[in-house]
Length: 198
Image 1 (tube, helix red, strand yellow):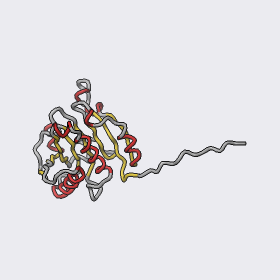
Image 2 (spheres, rainbow, N blue to C red):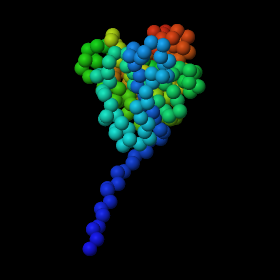
Image 3 (tube, rainbow, N blue to C red):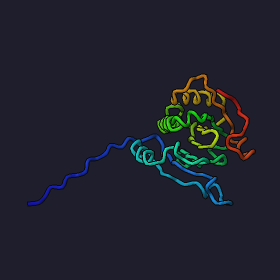
Image 4 (cartoon, rainbow, N blue to C red):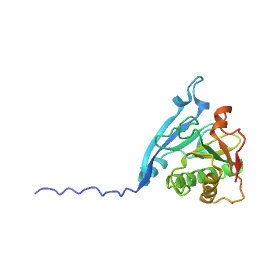
């Protein structure tokens, strides 16, 4: 008599519209003279809801990262740098969090809400403007940046307003928009004049 083999239950796969790459870096912990790209570590690639949660649930929460750390979530094929052709003419909205919000876990909450809105493509109605988002853990202020392809104020404003809604923020809370060109010229990620604020 032969034993019947039972097949493992199939797990439903819920595809996303695009493939995404999650990166990590901390320039402060890199040996002196290390090129930025050499410090960038790929955490994983995903193209379905299930793959996303499998990756995200096994990462250290942003609130537990050391100062200077960054998580970068970008569309596959777009590097998380100003010089990438997809980012060259664009910019980013910057949400700067006060220490109280970070201590209370709002950085983890807002980072999760941002990531879900980005991969779910609920903020970009055309599905072509958002390149990615970055969580930056800093001693003075944690920051989340939403990277867009252009600096068109009307297009960017609509996305920025939807981002506020996704995070449950008051529409009165200010978000500054900075160009990648300015960042490339100064060499600083966040110490640049804003093009506009919403």
